[in-house]
Length: 486
Image (cartoon, rainbow, N blue to C red):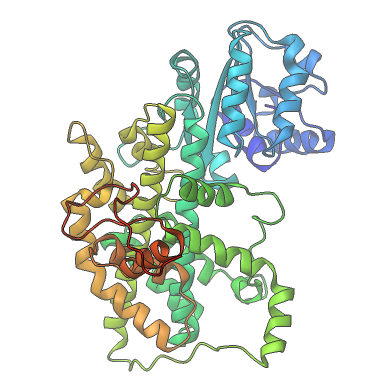
């Protein structure tokens, strides 16, 4: 294990729990020593060894040597591969369990294959608790590398309610890290929608944290949000109190900095990929924008002072008798945004798969997301499994499937009701409102871009198609009108 921080350390202990000897290497000797103390308490100290340099580490590994990386994304992985290079032999296996950029993964795969060294890019989800208990893992690479890696990974992976491991063959090349990147984009969209609903309940309806926790617990127990990890932990967060009896949530500041401080790159990359591949993914991208805005709290305070105040969320007018019906609408709105995030994310993965010829196994991806990961959502997983598993040559644009269309159509009125009320009361609802607009423009064949296209033709001679012609794809039109002579 190279990199023994919260994720690498947790996975090291997990491997040791399953009888696997793990050799530890980290730039910080104190980090390794702390991990060894934890292993002592857990009764597995005999399964862990400390090795401070790569030569000593490799000399004590069996053949073929198996390395697991848990490193910050970027050039550090290149430095580690370079440091290991003199000791690597044909048949050795590297499993990069970092949140690495998929392009870096593919570059390293190409470099190491000439040496006969296998390199698997593997997304790991569930956070540091899951790393210790059993995470969801998404490995991608050549078939031989996955043949070697999967028996090891299946031992330690999270398991679903049916007892199946939440790990599988994602696809070739950098697909493992790509799918994990989009997993995180979906995660951000889901988290934003839930947080928006939380603030509506807290500030709009004046509900206590404990009351909101009860609502989340109810949502998680039944219906379209059943078995959803984020809803489940939402109930816990709202009810958690410190040793003085105060709600821990009450002192948490409203800023998310992981996109800014460099510890998290996947949110940026997933939004970039949506734009690059021309996939409308507003539930994901609007969630990212509000995360970025939140990070600059000091600047927001300055802007507030400049404006002489802000646009406060007003109390919602629902009576106690009306509140249950509104909370049901809110539940359906959150579910609709969650499903929109999945649909948008899978559309991005599909286009990247076509471009890179990874042969992504979508049923395996859905199984990987069944448990141990942040986007676990039982109802949605059942829905997607029914689409991807029970048909040949599946159209992977999920908006083309009647089952998905029915889900969106059924819940559209609730989402519209919540967003409408949110607009009237100044609720901050970027992902909920973006999901509503996404549905509206995705199914509409009379968009305001009719006028937009005419403007483009007037000043840029960008051409247009005629309504009387058959609907075409995204290609340049065949007609120009001389609106104003040059």
